[in-house]
Amino acid sequence: MNNLWSTKIQSTELLYYSRLERFNDENCSRWFDLLKVKDGMKVLEVGCGGGHFTNMVKKYFPNCEVWGIDLDTNHINFAKNKCKELGLDVKYLEADINNLPFEDESFDLIFSHTVVEHLPFENFITEQYRTLKKGGHLVIMKVAGGVKDNPYMYLEDEIGKVFDKLEFEDRPIVGKYNEEIEQRLNRLHKYGFKNLGFSYDRFVYYCPDIEDNKQKALQQINLHFDMIRYNAIFNIQSAQNGEEHATELLDLLDKQYAIRKNLYLSGEKVYDYVSSNILTMWADK
Ligand SMILES: C[S@@+](CC[C@H](N)C(=O)[O-])C[C@H]1O[C@@H](n2cnc3c(N)ncnc32)[C@H](O)[C@@H]1O
Image (tube, rainbow, N blue to C red; front, side):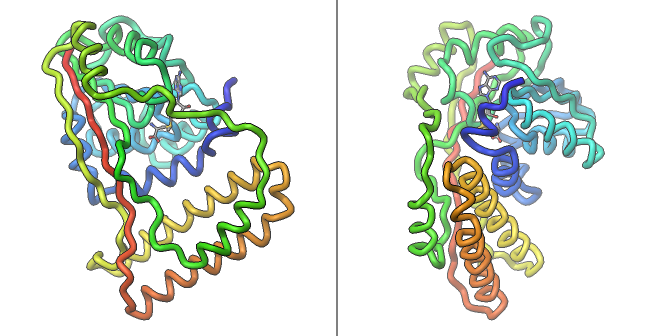
């Protein structure tokens, strides 16, 4: 049982809903092109969190055998329940990237999204190399600079002041294994990987004012503000004095959501947006 990530770093809901925003039905073909996934492959996502990306692969490539592993028990339980709810047959396992519970040369494709920066690279890659088939494809994705994840925030100052009052014990430091691309590619090369490459791709996944379809624009607003709420709830739960400030913070967030929604409904455009720059590195065994 390991709940470090979901209790100290990001709640499962926060992670899941942020990914629901990031990979969606509109943009998933661009993500799938980066993975080079094809129907019929045996696919593994390592560090799959709540499983949204993994589920999307199964949804669009139903003849793939899809596996997701994560060390965090809450994440994996959530992923198992969610895929059942969605009627998708994805195999989720609580497991460690350092010790993958699979035979040698099991997978055609192994991928990860925002995991590589949290582990020493040697630990991250050894077991993926072992479990990838000869000729199999490895894809490593992470967010790399140029992130804009806060749309224009109404009531920003008031909300910021309440956040400032929250008191936290030391939180684990994450993302401490950042390395230059050339170092990572070099290590992959030394491991024996071939056909190495990388790209940067900008994804914009929230900008309701440029969406033609009103229902979809409102969906974007609802999802985005749900996520802001999940972030606040996680902070309230992890702060020592969270309870004291919960009502004030959640009321402000309700107001913030109402302001944005009403602006949209009144036809006033503000063009707030959320985007991230994704670095994808790939290699063949
Ligand atoms: C930033 S989250 C990304 C989750 C998911 N890939 C996504 O984008 O939604 C990093 C994930 O790596 C997982 N993780 C960290 N160390 C791990 C390890 N040694 N084995 C398996 N998973 C690990 C964490 O539990 C967490 O779910």
